[in-house]
Length: 271
Image 1 (tube, helix red, strand yellow):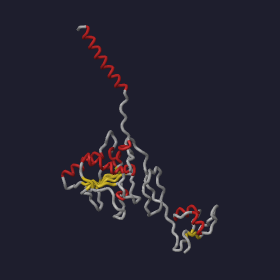
Image 2 (cartoon, one colour; image 1 turned 60 degrees about the vertical axis):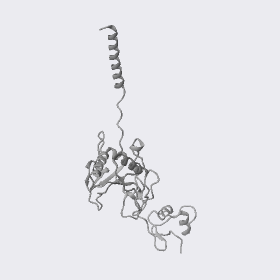
Image 3 (tube, helix red, strand yellow; image 1 turned 90 degrees about the horizontal axis):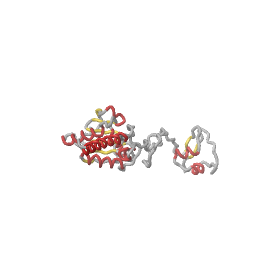
Image 4 (cartoon, helix red, strand yellow; image 1 turned 180 degrees about the vertical axis):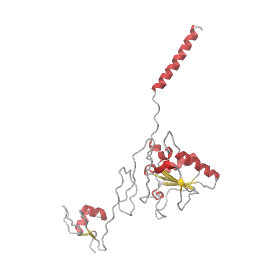
């Protein structure tokens, strides 16, 4: 072989070896971290305003798969509890009686619930989908490994896929939008047993305490104090300023007041 040919061959071999060495030195790409499995977060407040994460997910899924939109919000006076009343549920209009719509639903739900690099229901978790209902079946993200289960609710959901979102998903605080998972948003916390919480304002990273049983005053605005009662607690329970509680009960404007168990405490002005 001529000298020039040998040189070219040697150069080519060295180039291949160098390229292989460079590739070996580059660490493999890190797998994208996927959001944790959701917890169930039912409706606790009245805030029927479409949340940004739900709007974004709707745009994404309609563009990717097609179908129609059946709406996000619902009046708080309509029916029972529903995440629609917090603007974090969407009805994806598809009819189980139409072959085309069934194909769309199969592709879409399959994409949401499939495993990616070993992560079960990766895309649903990345978008913050809490659960889905379609054609008499329900898929629960908080029990994702159990797959689809029979659904026996009053509405069979044969004309739409219902998607409910976690608070992280509803507010676009998931890895799909933020690039990485965010801390769990526990959502609004009901203060009183049997009453709704105030609408969502900002992420709540602390678990909600158990709601309190609202104390009751009689028709004259008199409340019987409990053990360990304080003006601050009475003020909080009855949503009255401490200064007014003091004035209505003839207590000093400043300083500690000892309140005995069973003592009558006025929580509104005498009529």
